[in-house]
Image (cartoon, rainbow, N blue to C red; front, side):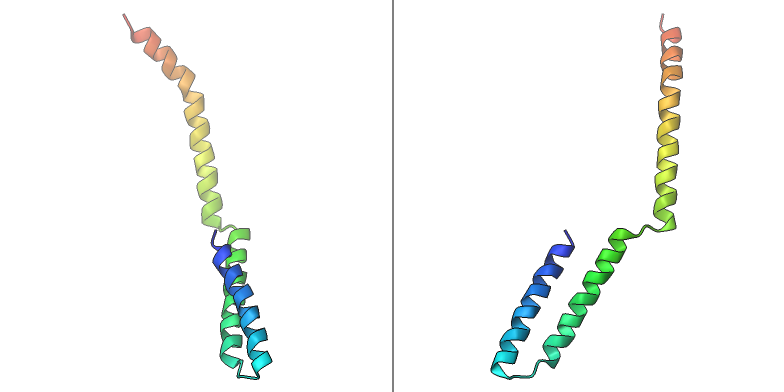
Length: 85
């Protein structure tokens, strides 16, 4: 979802550069904006591809707690069935 606006800005930047070169106007400002779009796209892709140690730790903790919950469910059901009159 975050990549869509960046791709649109990238395509729009290409169009504006070609139009400005056709009219022989200065393109430095457009090139700087285009560079920012490329940098933001790179950072977004990098963030999406890599995982931090915190995210990995959180996922492993969630998996362990889910497994413990699943393992304790049969025991809880046995206790509840023993306590009913």
